[in-house]
Amino acid sequence: MSERGRDGQGGRDGHGAQEERGARGRGTTAAADEQQAVRAFRERVGLPGLVDVHTHFMPDRVLKKVWAYFDSAGPLVGRAWPITYRHEEDERVALLRGFGVRAFTSMLYPHKPGMATWLNAWAADFAARTPDCLRTATLFPEPGVEAYVKEAVTGGVRVFKAHVQVGGYDPNDPLLDPAWGLLADAGVPVVAHCGSGPVPGNFTGPGPVAELLARHPRLRLVVAHLGMPEYSEFMALAERYEEVRLDTTMAFTDFIEESAPVSRDPETLGRLAGLGDRVLLGTDFPNIPHPYVHQLEVLERLGLGDDWLRAVCYGNAAALFGLDGGSAGTQGQGPTGTQGQDPADTQGPGPRRHPGAGPHRPRGPRR
Ligand SMILES: [Zn+2]
Image 1 (cartoon, helix red, strand yellow):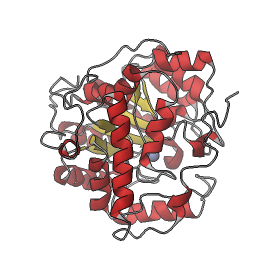
Image 2 (spheres, rainbow, N blue to C red; image 1 turned 135 degrees about the horizontal axis):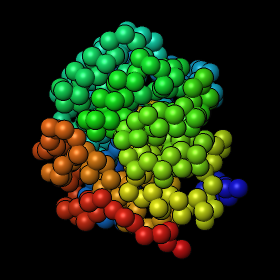
Image 3 (cartoon, helix red, strand yellow; image 1 turned 90 degrees about the vertical axis):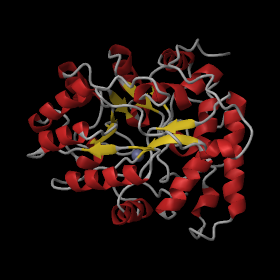
Image 4 (cartoon, protein in one colour; image 1 turned 120 degrees about the horizontal axis):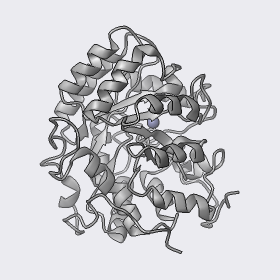
């Protein structure tokens, strides 16, 4: 279906990443080159900055375990998965800022009961000391989940992460139902890894999510990884429910195209264009097997046009989270996440204002 190698790029961008790069010793040249590549993308498209709704920050020992799991090609990953940005936390944050990312998340997730409140406390602290991080929380079907979700929402959480694959739970577990209701009422987006990629779980796939949305049609579900590999089915849910969104995380990248390619037929591209106000940039930084800019370039290569890219890489998330002083549509939550944080703009020329910052209804694919 999908024509691979259509861009003439035979190799994967990620190979250099497999070399051991000492966290501090990694050349500033490499970092500067990467920043330059991302800035060139932003300038081509006319983007003052990026919003990345799918980045992973978590307690250090948890992240080290995740990295070890990726290194060992654990069963939920399925294959060796090189980590490009295996750095200390402050360096990872600095890298995102250097790329011009104005707001990002700290996706974390429990794989068993009793973890979520501890993770949420860490994430609250992380967001407090990292003003450009949208405070993130997670949940698990367990006694008390309604209470801690309520507490998080009242406390100003901006986004939730639900990992149906790693968590191994049914999103329709009755224990979770009041929590979904709370999140739907508060309009807090929930980024959910609910597709069956890279490896299916007991409750992954569009079926359980369709059931959930039938009960909570206003839930602001952000389907991670564009629903990989059930792209078409999850796009159909977004087409049916106007609060459902999709993040781009890892989709279209060389690494994923090897196993779960997205079709580039006109119908699929047309659907992606039609969902242009509901697709959000996500990357999986730092746990990615390629340089950050690769995710941006593969989106650009879809040929859906600069309006689409501006909406996806900035405008849609800015509107969803109320980042430019607009209302996020959530209750009682102002744009507290990003003010005063704009280090990217101190580093070079480029548009300062946001030509594409509003919610967009992009035109069809440019061809
Ligand atoms: Zn992820």
